[in-house]
Every structure is written in C-alpha cells, then in structure tokens.
Length: 76
Image (cartoon, rainbow, N blue to C red):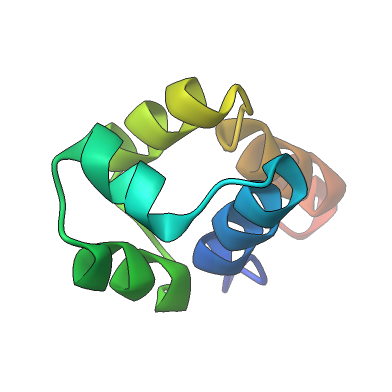
C-alpha cells in the first residue's frame, strides 16, 4: 500500500493556519530554515522528528496515518 499522505505539506499547512513562520520551527527544532523547507517538500518523515513537530504544533500528525490506515484496512 503506497501512502497517499504528503506529511510535509500537512505540516506546512498547519503552520500557515497557526500563523507560524519556518524560522520559528527551525529555531524550535535546532534546524536551519533550509532543513525546515526540506521537511515541507518531503512526503515522509522520521517518527522522532514527527513527534517533536506534533508536540510543537499541538497536532497529532500520527493520527493522519492511523486514519488513513483505518480507511484502507479492507485492502490489507
């Protein structure tokens, strides 16, 4: 099953919704802004980083995957 989720774009959309800038996320993660933009461009992200971003933004991004899995469970 290929994921249809582009987690980087979801993170970017949430940051826009919250009025946060990439420089804020970079500072909080101890990353460069360049690396934050690379996150936005990725369709996958390691779980440690996703957990940190979820905590910072107050959004359970793991639930996106759980919901996707549940809606496609008949094809497993």
